Image (tube, rainbow, N blue to C red; front, side, top):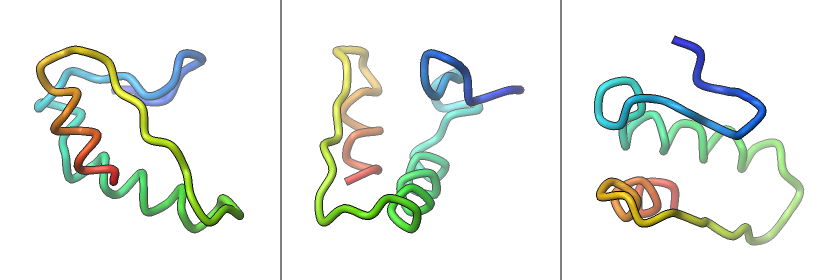
Length: 56
């Protein structure tokens, strides 16, 4: 399954897109971005808070 597209990261929540994967992506982004802080945004889906916390 392709996770990265023109609209960001996509996947079936808790099947392909898991909190562990979100954490890995956040860590990888942190090694590439030259910033002291980043914003983590989410939508209102039931897994939004879970994934936002995993990325934070």
